[in-house]
Length: 351
Image 1 (tube, helix red, strand yellow):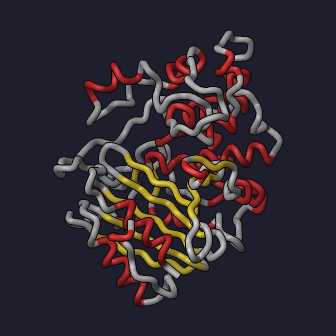
Image 2 (cartoon, rainbow, N blue to C red):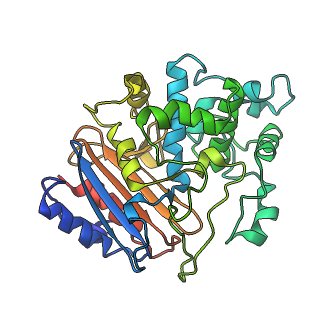
Image 3 (cartoon, rainbow, N blue to C red):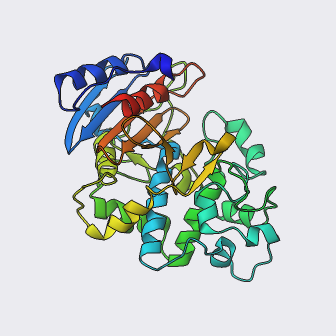
């Protein structure tokens, strides 16, 4: 990512930071772009893009997070564990369908395996693709509801023993969401709101489209607008919509010294920043329960990106320095896309 690096700056509230964000936004080709940075509660936000601004300011629109929804699922699990309502080592099949006959490998899959992508499950169920391919560019998930996700899990035949290999899986995190709903007797949307969104004051973070004119419109690579994404039964893996301002609030809660609206979240917030596994060549890749973690000269950074059919999001923070970065864009990802590299550079190269 060195070809897209950004020059270091000293403080996110300085004029240099505003210029930095404006220069970075200029490298992202999308109808709507928002780059936001904070440290010590002081925020700098830059908005731009090739489209004309709408009636709602870009930083107050709801953007589809895609896989950047997963840190919210991770924080929810950590909080339920801290409350003693579930354990990381609880077996998902036992909570979802007690006594139902499943493959021995499925029986061994725990909540931790599902969240950390070590369950042995594929990225998506095998029977997902026949119904999705005809609608791949418009609505691949909408016809695959929650009960079908659960059935696919209960009849799965994992290729690898749980806990032995890392393989990124929207399927697994979606199963985690349905498992937590079953274990608590609470719908996922209600559970997430009660345990994470409300305690953090995230009033503009939603699991479905918001009121008229408040949702950002995604676009194909050619600029064609797209309807709002329907994630079907894969809610926990990618259904959230949020504003950049709410996302800053979410990230700010994770950094050292954060003043929490609900102090009972402190244990869970600490837990999700703790490294739990290493993978890859020479174990170079480090992960917490829900974040990717990389070293930098300024301390470790934790981050997660997400993409939907027509939008992208990036969330990242440095726990020790209090730096947080949010980026959103309303164009589908493509091979020459600079979005993630630019946002990552803001996170890793700012003093």
